[in-house]
Length: 89
Image (cartoon, rainbow, N blue to C red):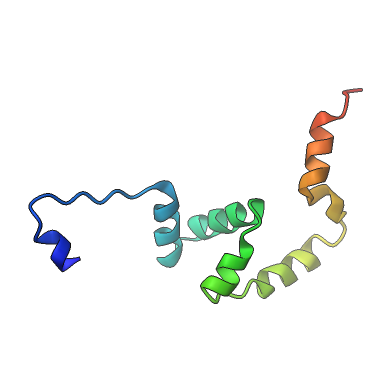
């Protein structure tokens, strides 16, 4: 960063993705929740676990206990797509 700041013109652009990761690293709970939500939606939770070494086991354990009465098929991507395409009654 010091070398970059010595240049006559430096432009650093942060995107939404970068802000969410920085906010999560700072401990902002809303951003942590959003990060997990986005990672789950795009099936990249392994990045959180393997890339950053953050165990999601406590979250999975909580979810399994708290939501054990809800059928898992409701959460599957294929199921949601089928529900959207189903004819209305």
